[in-house]
Length: 344
Ligand SMILES: Cc1c2[nH]c(c1CCC(=O)O)Cc1[nH]c(c(CCC(=O)O)c1C)Cc1[nH]c(c(CCC(=O)O)c1C)Cc1[nH]c(c(C)c1CCC(=O)O)C2
Image 1 (tube, rainbow, N blue to C red):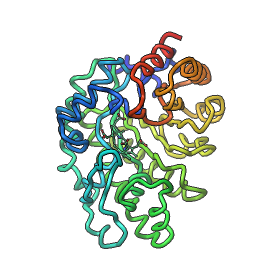
Image 2 (image 1 turned 45 degrees about the vertical axis):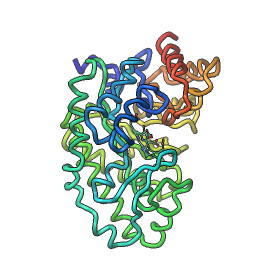
Image 3 (image 1 turned 120 degrees about the vertical axis):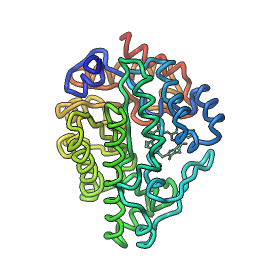
Image 4 (image 1 turned 180 degrees about the horizontal axis):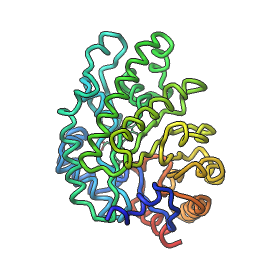
C-alpha cells in the first residue's frame, strides 16, 4: 500500500528511522549488469528509448540493494530532443546537441505540449515500472530544470562554467528567457504525464544552479522551478516534488518556501549540521554524502554516513549522495553505505 512506503511518509513530513535510501545514478556504469544491458541496447539513447531495457536497468539496483526508491531510467536531455533539437552522446565524453544561438533556432522548436509522441516510450517505461516494482518501493520520475537544460541547449554540450548560456543571457535576454519558458512549459507537460503513467514522486535536477548569481538565481533557478511545481501541483496536488539546486550554498536556505518543493536535495557543498539547522526545519532534505566515498570506502565512508544520519535524525530525511555515483565506484561500498544507514 502506498501509505506504507517510507519515502512517501518522509515526504509528507514524518521523521523515519532509519531514513529511507536511494542513490542518484543508481542505475549506471558502476554496475556490471547495467554495462551488459547497455551493450545489448547499443548506445545510451537507444537504452533510454527502449522501454523494456530501460525498465530492466531501473530494476537492477532495486534487486541488488533493495533501495527504497527506483528512479526512472532516462535523461534530462530528452526534453530538448522532444522539442526538435538534435541530440547524440559521444561515448566517454558526454552529450552533444546542435546549439541554439539564434532566434530562428528557437522558432524551429516545437511547443511545450507537442513533446508527447516523442516521449511515449518514456511513459511506457514508467507504466512498466509501476506494475513491476516491489510494493514497498517508490517510483520517482524526473526532469531537468530549465536553466540546466538550457545550458546544454545553448552550448550544444556540457561546459565547465556554462559560459555560452551566460553569454546569451547578456546579449539577448529576450531569446534566453523564451528558451527558459519553452523548457518550463514542456517540463510541466512531461512531469504530469509521468505522474499519470505511475510516477509517485518527481524530482527536478538543476545541476548547474550554482553558476547563477544574485537575481539570476531567483529569475532562472527559483522562478522556473516554482512554476513547474505549481504546474504539477495544479494537476496532481498530492504528488511530492524534490528539487535539486546543486551548488546553491547559502541559498539552500528558504528554497522549500520559495519554490513549493516538498523536499530539497543537498549536494556535498554544505555541512549536514548547517543544513539540519537552516534547511530541514522548512521540510524534508535528501542527499549530502560525497559520491567519492563510493570509490574510496572504508571507515571514512562509515563515519561520514553516520554523521549525516545523525545530523538529520530530528526531521524528515531521505539518505542519498550529494551527486550521482560515478562509474569507478565499487558496488561493495554501496552495500557498506546501506548497511551503515540501516544497521547503525
Ligand atoms: C546534467 C544531467 C544529465 N543527465 C542528468 C543530469 C542531472 C543530474 C546530474 O547532474 O548528474 C540526469 C540523469 N541521467 C541519468 C539519470 C537516470 C536515473 C538515475 O539512475 O539517476 C538521471 C536522473 C542517466 C544517465 N545519463 C548519462 C549516463 C551515462 C551514460 C552511459 O551509460 O554511457 C547515465 C546512466 C549520460 C549523461 N547525461 C547527462 C550528461 C552530462 C551525461 C554524460 C556524463 C556521464 O557520462 O555521466 C546530462
